[in-house]
Length: 524
Image 1 (tube, rainbow, N blue to C red):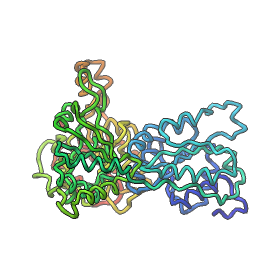
Image 2: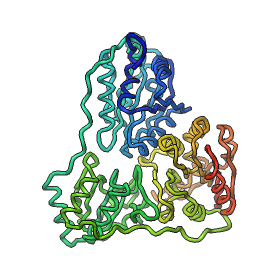
Image 3: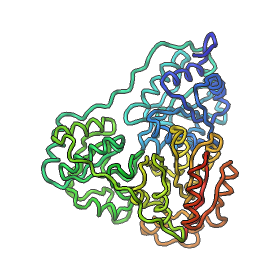
Image 4: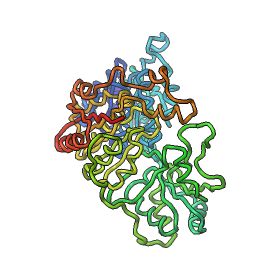
């Protein structure tokens, strides 16, 4: 605890975070948070990481939580600061990432004057937060903070937003001994639901076993693969997932494709689908003449385990109940990603080369959007790695997510595959990577356009891009120079246009310390 005779509210809040093993704070503070900044300055156990935009702060907290399996704190400045970070809090919510937001507010006596930054912070927070509270009394700082942490740790991981008025932060607040309730331990589904799932797996129908959340880690995936093989079921993951442990020697796993037509083909013969920590598959958007649900008519949906229940224990119980023991063996990926390509740098060639060169136990952060659509399929035989992706569709997550993942796992290489258009949303994350000296290799897929939107213009039946549409969808006038942008943030980089130069740059970057950027200028 602090050495002050009577700690301030800010000190108590910070100490409570540390007492609950939250030792990293991603921050972009302002005047109303200065007493909390001063308290953090007195706590050397807390790592404080500055982001130059709130979307970097919240996206980094998301990436950190996915890899650390515990919350980080964010420090945000009033309602506008929180609003700037909401997009990546949306992604964090969809990923099941635990995050504790600390949002400063005006001193309570100042609120009636309606100063320029006054806003309804609670209303701004609620759409992305499972729990929101404004601390109303210095005596409540400890208990409210502990409750926020418990809310964030509620399975599978939640967003908790705690609003700290400036006068609460600077007031005396003797630490309370009240301990908030711990988060509920994830439980098994109801016995009757479990029995129904066993009956379904034994009924001989064409069955999909769809897994999400923590069921996509290596050990539960191996159990799920044995169940699928033993019952003749097919294993599948949703299109978007917070974290998947995959690669050579790990379980073979397919995802629901992004494209509606491709997804309908993959799911066409399913007679029943059993969901464990996953939701029934739906189209990302509505398209004229195409369905929203991706399941065939008549396919029965069995919701075995929700994301609040324990998918790992559920899979273990299923394997025991089905009498599988340790057999059959899980179906594992063979190593290898095909021969190294050569010549012009197409998306397919880049992905193949990346699969060949990805180091063991790397963390692959994917916001490649259209150019990397085949990344998951083409890297299945790469060295064992963790795969993190954009989960809520709010672009601008890749660079911050990689930043947070690198802070959570300092001994591992992070490779970020980033589309150029969405990368511009949060390119300030490169500065944080440089300041923190993080081992992140960023690969910019530079096609100088919002390629996905060109495709979506056709898919929704709106035609092809004319002059006005191209002015909204292309990034070539002026063209972005990512090497210069990176150097301006303190990150060295290089531009490449062939597979050979890309492979040489990636090999070199993976042997050096600190961040590095490769602008892959793709062939049209």
